[in-house]
Amino acid sequence: MHNVFLIMVVIKNITCIGAGYVGGPTCSIIAQKCPDIVVSVVDLSQSRIDAWNSNVLPIYEPGLEEVVFSCRGKNLFFSTNINEAIEQADLIFISVNTPTKTYGLGKGRAPDLKYIEAAARNIAKIARKSKIIVEKSTVPVKAAESISRILSANQTNDVRFQVLSNPEFLAEGTAIQDLLIPDRVLIGGEQTKEGREAIDALASVYKQWVPEERIIKMNTWSSELSKLAANAFLAQRISSINAMSAICESTGADIEEVAFAIGMDSRIGSKFLKASVGFGGSCFQKDVLNLVYLCEALNLPEVAAYWHQVVEMNEYQRKRFANRIINCLFNTASDKKLALLGFAFKKNTGDTRESASIYITKYLLEEGAQVSIYDPKVTMDQIMLELTDPDLGLDPKKVKRLVTIAPDAYSCIENAHAFVVATEWDEFKLLDYNLIYKKMLKPAFAFDGRLILDHAHLHDIGFQVEVVGKIVSSGYPQPLTPTLPPTTSFFLMKGPELSSSSRAPPTIYG
Image 1: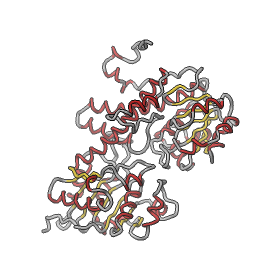
Image 2: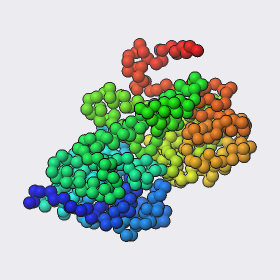
Image 3: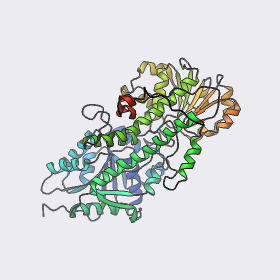
Image 4: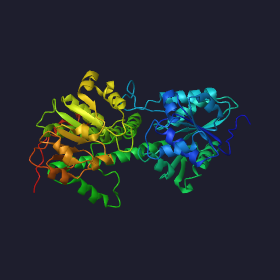
């Protein structure tokens, strides 16, 4: 009997290691929907746990407060007592950070799994009874296998582990709804009797509110790859429509009309066809780069190059938009006040990871601009933390000298040469732009990087209006489009005779 893994028929105690954007909301919903299960969310950060136990949660997500406050202290607990929570748990979610490596082998592409490994080793050390371990973090394919090897090497005859893959598909800003009404729940595990029992045990938790037909059971590899593939496909759509926006700006086509037309095709659909300054967040770029690294490791260089182009196009879009701002400002931004509206990577979240605003600010600061920033949910400390990150390459002294954080949109824009909408917060649609125009330097420029404003109205007020994917105000030359880095250029990959620098521009016949 010692060598048989006995699954608990009913899960009574769940522990989540990691109290971040995934672990906190996910386990809060589980606690709300499964009142008979005790859910403990643990983390090494005392300040983060203190915030979860306060009236001001560490992350902003619509609907999250109501869920947490309804369960906290009843069957939902936040603690730094990791070892005790591990010992008591029947099932453990590993939901720790998996950043892209910034050092060594795979730098810039491979995921850094040191926190995953540390969690697995600690579980093996503490556990005194058999448990189900669930990887919830965004991880590369075969991560579950690595976790299993660590656990197996340290397990005793009386303790057995089954490792499952249960990837999250949460969109920040709608995470609570995504958890309550998911498109699907994937559970991957070993295709053995014990593995299938573990899969069924986790499925029994989700069945308390998710229809059974939406709970998909599969092998571990398929589950892990499905997560990377889903985000890669979504990122690809954004980069594809952004690539079309560049053509629209050069031809006079309207990207919103083009997106509407192709979105009417039932084979394509309308979602994720909104042109912008580029995607951000913790998942898209990281997951695409993970996929690139996986392809390289599998000796599939052509596949790796294909997916890497999605990330390159995203960077190209950011740089192209920043160049357009500088070009319209008579080719210089030095000592000019530019107002940046929004710093979060999308509305309804305070998350700034890989936000397009970071890079637009970086490019403008490199031109000597004085940048005023306002975001309704991102704190000054978080903004300065992002802009002074050593990996960004900006001089912290220069950042502190040139960047100011405004308390509201009006003071942010006052006496500015231009304002830039970088995050699609709804409040930016409701501003009094007649008043704003009066308080700006003339000519006053409006740059809409999210296609949320009434461009005709702004033009009628007197703004020089520049937006992604269309021409609103005329009379100014279009900016030169920055070339892609030679190492990733499609033409350079085909040989020197097709180098982008040697090709004549195509003739467009009317």
